Image 1 (spheres, rainbow, N blue to C red):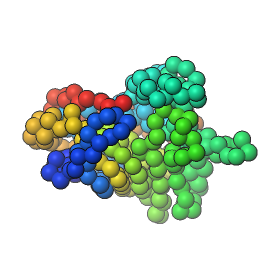
Image 2: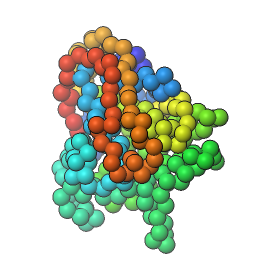
Image 3: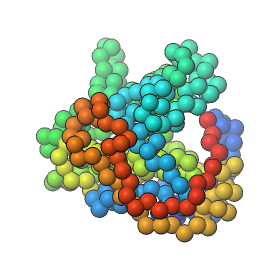
Length: 283
């Protein structure tokens, strides 16, 4: 919580106003932020200065792992995070690649599980990573990336959290995640939950101890219609101690994650929090 609140305060104190063409709003912006999460000691980075709906964040990540491209599939897992981008994004609604209601196109998990090659075949990036790590192999290229400029026009949204690099040192697995753009009041809590949970899950199914998760953000911002709530409400609240994330130990493979795992297989213990804050969301 201290590093999250420090970033929020830094944006309030040092941020520069930047016009955002996609949303038509101004963003108070800083460049370069580095966060890290102690997965080894299960210090779950869940926001405590407002109520956080952590299950939706893990459900979204599980959808990425499964390579989903439809908002309805994400809803079935327990998250509505893709509803607006799939169905209320004017540019996407007019895009000839859109297949119909709830279609997201070739975004995030689609790229991670079926990156298209020129010959029409696909690359399953995640499967390669899991196979290597399960054998104790780190070729310094255990990289999962969703950032495919050649197919930006085939999806409803460019990826924000775009690349995850796994590093195996002895029997300890670390993760470095890269994010080009971050809506700090709303998106960051989702993002840090997902970075933490991704490392914890991959370590568990590949038979390694989780270590540290490093989260690098290029453009960190607060939208103009979020600033008052952040400055005058959330930043004035005292944080509570970090909770812990419990994951069903029966999750032992990528196939488990692809088939039977639900949000019932995750539990947060010791979560104390202040009341919710309804920040505006920008499509």
